[in-house]
Length: 494
Image 1 (cartoon, rainbow, N blue to C red):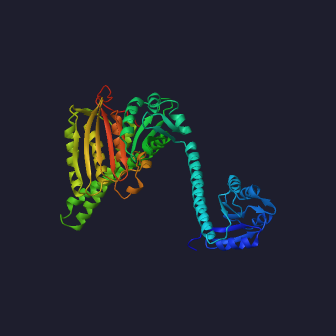
Image 2: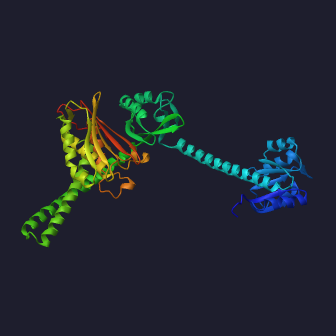
């Protein structure tokens, strides 16, 4: 029935006439009704009948008033009880409600009785539904809290005004510490923690609700532990907090080193046969008529072999970057020229996708000390990614500005954005987001970006919001940590 409020109702009433009238009054609102003429009979009925509502008289032959209601509530702690009595004494109502009754109705059995009863049933049903939902949410929150407390990942909530730690799970306390400002703890416990603390303070004020910012941390204690750290905004009323999530990636990086060894051996073995195929197709193409199908087939085979060689070269470059054998030699470069070169190289791609690609604000006046090819690769990969994941009619801009001792280059897009849970893994080797599996790529682009920037002693940060776009910020120091030959060899990425 459409207006059914309860499924099974137990009526405890020692007056058969009253029981019949109450049953008639509730028939429109319940599915099934069971009648018991005493408390003992009610207890026997409960052995085979579990109600989701009890309507009981206050005075029975074997129980009365508060003792009766208390006994029912103890037997059925999660079932609402409504008291029906001929007494109009306020004392009876107070006594019943104190021991667990949800409502109190006087049995007048006049024209308004059914309406009054239906109103009481509806009110109790609504309260009962809210109570069950509250208990369900409470149980889920308790489960979530246990999961967070026992997690190996460090999770904390930081006050958006002063950086005090409002919540920290056990892992957060173990990794970051407690009893002090989050920014002070960053400076004390992590390499380059002071610089990161300055940036983190700024991000806490700049990030809008739903935005996320990702960076990296390394401990100062031996053995060195590496962490991916993510900031996301939490707003509750007038209070603003930042959820800080630190994920230990030390073991992951150790496994990656092992995987690189296997991949390197395989790719080296493949270069020889592919080179022979490419050379053979070039010789065969020269010997075949220009317009023949055979020559077209040879050219296609050669193109496929070249693509495979290019991919292998990308894998090997990634390996050299990881091993520190990818040599970078910084020199003074004009930043405007470098950015123009990257933008023009991607102009056709942007035009084909109807995306506006342009240089934004640029306030850098001094030459930038970077490895030219390394910088072009970094900015090219970021612009290429931005164009891939920005829809038609969108915008990609390159901005640059200075901070003390650092030049920052930002690639901003109006693309799909990145989920907070995915930001922490986009820089991983071969990482591809599930929603972008259909987009061509090796999953090495951002890995190379992070490695080349780290070689310069720089930083890579991401600020993103789903549905609004992303900002990739790469910072290059004005004085990169070169060796005596002016080279960057050992990378800060292990």
